[in-house]
Amino acid sequence: MLVSRGARHLAIATCAALVLTIAACGKDAPPPQAADTVANPARLYGTDGNMINSFGDEFKDQAGMLAGMKGTTPLTRLSDDFKARLKALRPSLPDFSYAGETYDAIVISALAAEQAGTNVPSEIANQINSVTTGGTECTTAKACLALARAGTDLQYRGVSLTRGGFTDAGEPSTASYATLHFDSTDKLDDAKTEYVGAGDESATTTKKPPSGGSTGGKQAELKIGGLLPETGDLAIAYPPMEAAAALAIKEINAAGGVFDKDVTWVPGDDGTNPDVAKATVDNHINAGVSVIIGAGASSISRAVLPAVVKAGLVLFSPCNTDAGLSTVDDKGLYFRTAPSDILQGRALADVILRDGPHKITIVARNDSYGTGLQGNVKSELERAGFPVDMIQTVTYEPPTPAAPDIDFTAGANQIKSGGPDGVLVIGFGESAQIIKALDKAGMEIRH
Image 1 (tube, helix red, strand yellow):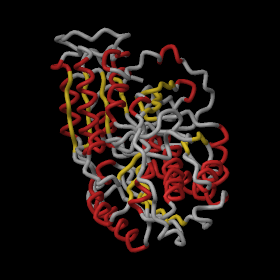
Image 2 (cartoon, one colour):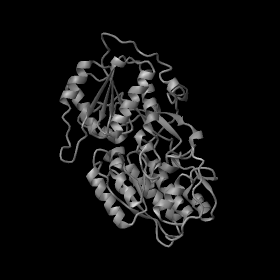
Image 3 (cartoon, one colour):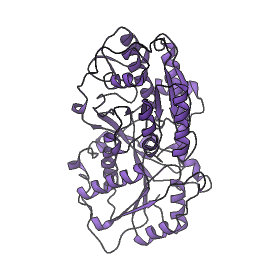
Image 4 (tube, one colour):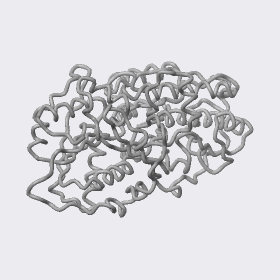
């Protein structure tokens, strides 16, 4: 996830071989051979759901537990100006997780509405891919809205969308990833962050939207609803997304709004819970929103998508990474500014292989995000020649509001008995319970 960056003397040379094509995976570290014994202690690895500064707050009673943990996240290097604008709105903002993606999702939605000349969701959807490719390049809400009002074909390049535009599936054709490291204070060490590009600009759509959009809804204001994790397992990622949403709405309206009217933001919680999210979607339908920004978790978007599609609204997530969402039956109404986990699986495999482990355990929450990314990482490790019998996979049921605590005792003992020297934890805030269970089981963590 996006995090604050201090000094950025980035070791790009070390990062250059980061596996963003299958052939490159593990290039710098030969695959380990199967062995009767494996090394201990085990190094911890994480993903975009837990590689975030606020995750360290879960270990106040066990300071230093995360020291040495490393992982990947979709991450674009944010400009100091963008971070300053966010901080001006939310001075206590802990980090910038998915802030760029949230900001871009809202700006793209506004541009598509202005380009369509209507707040009718289906016609906005027809324009979303188009405003990211093929026209006059613009990089700010103000400049791009001016082009849209003039009827000029435009190509938005904003905070997270900096290279290729959207694909036919309505997601970025290119992405930026980073390798992050927790330090001894359980915070991310900015100086160790490495960035690398991913994807292929040739995958950017060349399709043009239908001509002659409706103007029937032009006199009505554009309403955009939030479906973000105010509560639940992913709530640790909410503050920067909320701040980015507030900034986007502020800057769009300062630039004249859409249809010469202020865009209205209708906040809403997805609760990292299908029932909470479905209730929020119902409220948005009744409120007359055209676009819903969210959900936070891929599994929540899957849960609400049928209702959103039935109502004919746009669902636009800033942080869904489940690879299967690229082909979900969405009637052309689902979009995302976050890249598919196919790319993150390759990046994670490379990070793990560089450390030269002998045996890996991949622990994942049992939902489309967790098991999907678990499968991607496992496949990439195997492609790189990692022995199949040296990869262990374990899943757990995510917590619920009624049962927020996970009993991972049996799973922790199972992992410890397997003797891995690397453990990848794919989850959200509840990952802390998994790590603490491993520690309680007597597993030695490498720091």
